[in-house]
Length: 120
Image (cartoon, rainbow, N blue to C red; front, top):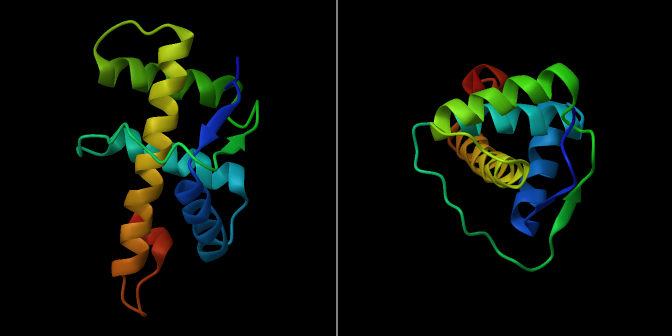
């Protein structure tokens, strides 16, 4: 099991690139962290993002055990059974929201704070 191709907004792509550089991690790892942060957040997820200039998150970025874990966390948070289309819709919403949460942490940190610790 693995994710299908998903479309990230242009703003989300810029945030992803910024966080990738700030955390000194590769994109797939930052996508995993953003998804986890989005699911863990108590904020109401924003479902509308800029429809222009989408960037494609390739297939198999989240796969096997990680995909299964995220799938069940999303189903638990949704409190209902989700089909594959709904699951991937929720997944991209949580990734987008997680990226924005991490960006706010990065923007609000002091020079002495480590972003990795703030994300935890």
